[in-house]
Image (cartoon, rainbow, N blue to C red; front, side):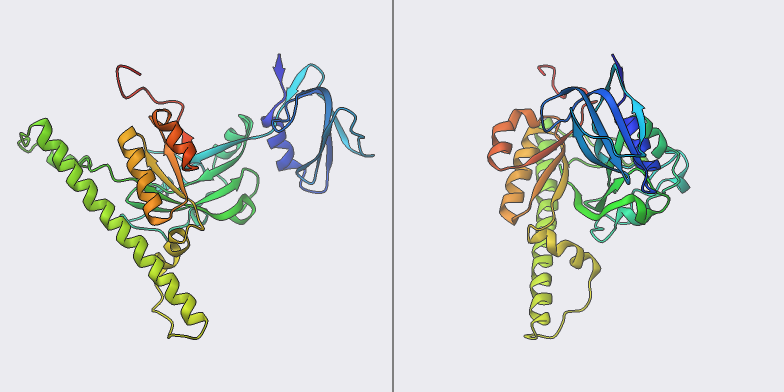
Length: 311
């Protein structure tokens, strides 16, 4: 069966901004939130879907697209991407995903989005109409932006400028360092390496926890100053950005894959009152009951190989 899907809807949303009305008629409509309509009509007005149904009246003057024999479905959302932040990986000037330093909560992805990226129309043509563009790297990467993939300026693209805070959950494993390739390798047993990893992880978790507590205190001081009880604290952009995260008002997306690390991340989030979303989640299925119990959402990568031979 041919598909008239999100790719078409994406093009419509990009083209129908000038109060144009488009009706897609006669197709099999996948509504997602309701039952499939075997033969129905979708009306798009001003770039937004305004009506869906089997007996929808088509507005006078609307452009009608005959979708008979085809399937119409809502646009897809890329839940975690660097779309708009990177163009060609081997050209540093076209990559704007990572800030200097490893703690950058005040970095906002929407500021760096390139609305003229050649990758945006490619994504639209493949049915993606919205995306969560996120920074990467470091311990605290920064804040992602929710984008609609139609627009000629960052403002026009951006639905929400501060969608979530992104962090890389510390695993304790040493980062790759090319400068050490020619050094004599340090010989350690598996147990010694595991102990080192655990020590490093605990050190980084303590550091992250201290940052969150500091941000919470900063937020409380700002609130007290606003009420006139104390003098305002010195402006601090990183703490300003982290304060709503520490209060549980802004979700935290943590990149974490291993079962042990996912359990640890859930406990860390609970201890610090964070609204956690797991990204990657390669072994999230192993702790599905825990994630459901703690109401933790998971952005699962679907193109990764299993971690264990038994998977």
